[in-house]
Image 1 (tube, rainbow, N blue to C red):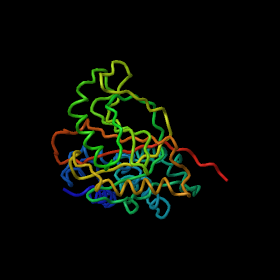
Image 2 (cartoon, one colour):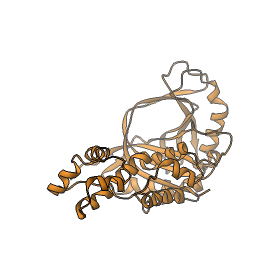
Image 3 (tube, rainbow, N blue to C red):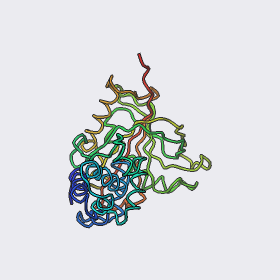
Image 4 (cartoon, helix red, strand yellow):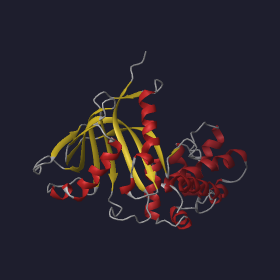
Amino acid sequence: MLKPYELLENVLLEIEKGIRDDINADMLAEKFYLSSVHLQRLFKFSFGRTIGSYIRSRRLSASIGDLLKTNFSVLDIAIEYGFEYEETYIKAFKKEFCITPGSLRKTGEVVKITPPMHLFDAKKSVDGVFFGPDIVMVPQFHIIGRLHHVSGGDIAALTPEMAFKFWDEDRLLIKTELAPNDIYVGFARNYNFGAGTMDYMPSVPVKDLKNIPQGLCGDTFESSLCARFRYIGQHHYFDLNRERMQPMYNEIYKFRTNEQEKYTLSNDKVYFEKIDLREVDINKYDGTYCKMEWFAPVAEKNEK
């Protein structure tokens, strides 16, 4: 199986090769020995949009060259780029660019296209790849988990151990309605890098903080603008470790210390890791890719 970076890079190249053909998610999945559903989830996790919408945008953007540089009819161009009917092409074109192909030919209006995506700026780790930061709004959510005060030692090594123990044992004690099932949240407060301490809570999202089991704790993350980093690795979820994640953590540190960034990490020292396990069997590695998201609140820097 290809490593995540290689897979995504090759998928993007195949889309460009097939831009005038009937390329689609099913064909790409078959070529790279993945299920169509899994490939589409992986693509959306990586690039924030579906394969279908990206292919459609690329076809329409590529068709503008023929529209402005040749005398081909709109029907011929539509067929050339995989649209069976002229009307379908015109409707999709107008939705994409807010102008019809005919009007664009007459007016020469400047339109914003979708260029080919590349992974040149993506960061590689040992056997994975990560993306970010994105600035996103995270709605309020509640969690229940087991609170640990981590002092000294290797935090990056201790937190996975806490996560696995929680998932196998403490999670089963939570009877309140989960929101939704099979999502893990590693929630950290009061992180002190210099002292090597923090409060860390392996947890799951819940509808409310009623009926918290004895020995466990509840917490609430308030709606916040956040920096989000995303990681994809070719390994079991149990094998998330410092070596694999260090390149992403280095990038987070660069983001935090870069004076040119528009946003800065907030001073309340809260962050959380999120792993959606709804599509995998956590007890075995079934050839799918491990995915994790990292979030921390940000504030816009004051303009000087």
